[in-house]
Length: 496
View (spheres, rainbow, N blue to C red):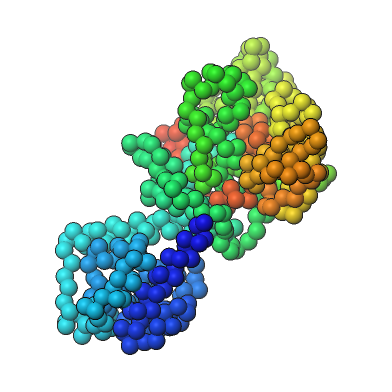
């Protein structure tokens, strides 16, 4: 339906341009040929014709097109603020109206000194401010949506590769900018209005998923920002908890009574950042917390953290020393035993302390893992093997595969999935197998025992991918004092 409406509005808009081109002494057909149309506009407005080459440059081409387009309309005397706004937002209404209005005539090349002298037009102070604010808003929105965006690390799931308080830039261009799925939204807000709260977007228009060409494909072990894939989200303090997790722990009635449940469009869900350890078609597994991809030991991030038990002689730990190392610890029921999340180097350092008898890595056998089904007694440290779906991959449907791939078939690929007495039905038709329409990825945090990731909620669909983390441009340490609150060694540090 949207395609039909879009096609009709485009035809009406081009019809309006056709009429205006004829008024300017050109052939109407010149208005419907991309690039040549802009070349003619440049001639009619006295803009450099080489600007047409810039239409091939992503993001830049948007500014070039609208500069030529609005200059073209100025050549017909359309220079007032409301005329510029409706020309951008409602061209399918006003271009035909102006094209058929006998009082609207081509006045000459709008970007010349002679034109400005013959048709003087002075903007009011309010108009100058409005133009500046609107331009800045549009430019920032386009840059955030299609080029690069700043993020802040709020949780410790990627420590110590990324630290709480790291501010980083995420490139939308590397994997290709995703066309906004929910295009009607308040500028600079993700999903919630600043100050007032409430939704910062409208679901009146929902566009199908489309990604513009990028510089590269996602690579294994890239650090990736993506939209939370599990669907339902709850209050902010539970950003890293799925609704299903809370229900299992506290019961459905308690969750419904105590927490706000929201289901948002894909591009308005919470942004997560993890390491892409598994690619489409890979087989992922964990054995005693060691990750394997396709049966081979996987890449180990140099700053990866694991939970460790620290057995001491009972004399305790030097809290100032722990603070200086920025290591948090938890004392167990036995006062001589502590739990810490440590890198390999940190574990070796602590093991060398005189009052430490042993450092033992914790293996989590109790935390249930995806798919949370009776057929799979998996934990977050002993998991799989599990095949990650790839576009075009076909899986047989049975009682063992449905728990693994049912959510992807139903929620991520937009199908109905039912089990009946004689088998499984997809979109009302009996099916023995299913072929996936998009690629999926397996994301894990580098702080392996303090990360809610694919081990808890499964695959990340390709249409949930936001961008690639490039570098930290600032890092704020809330445990520091004065100038030490800034982690100077992390400024402009690349993310590996």
